[in-house]
Amino acid sequence: MERGKFITLEGGEGAGKSTNAQWIADYLRAKGKTVLVTREPGGTEVAEAIRGVLLSPELPGMNSDTELLLMFAARNEHLQKKILPALGQGTWVICDRFTDATYAYQGYGRGISLQRIAELETWVQGDLCPDYVILFDLDVATGMARAQARGQADRFEQEHADFFARIRNGYQARAEAAPARYPQIDAGQTLEQVRAQLEQLLERILTTEEVA
Ligand code: TMP
Image: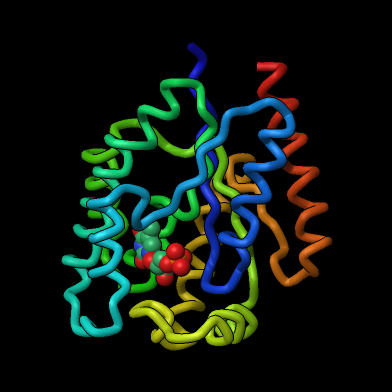
């Protein structure tokens, strides 16, 4: 059985990843693919419980390495129980955030060495990495305003603009290193324009897959 494609959605706060995840899945289903939509941190019972700890505004003083290890603990659970079995059955997996978020938030944002993150990545993932990382790029002020409008801020959303600026730069640095694998969406556009851009991108991915 041919392995499914693994597509992750990334970007700062309020960039519209979650809003578009289901739409992307529906688009691919209409093209005949079996699709699973999931998210990180989370996606399984244990990983969602870890998410609760990671995002809780009641736990403000968490050590950065603890945060990093919890992200990878949740990821290991998610990979073993959900993502790898699905890909193995030929299902396409759309994951709202994955390891690029760890590089952006814990690496560029918190200042943990990228080498240390790479070591955990190899341990937990082996050589598995997303086939495509769709990066929703948005200026920091707009993203923060959108996230604030959603209601009570989680532990990450309570951070300041300079934290989110480092995250945006981190995502850009990763995209620049491998642009073909990191297609970018201008998330400052209207939803209609974002969807038009996504449609073009998904058609390109589907065509590339047919040729391969
Ligand atoms: P979200 O699902 O609303 O995007 O919230 C998840 C939060 O967790 C978001 O602020 C980004 C953060 N995060 C990390 O810091 N590192 C990670 O590896 C992942 C997956 C998420």
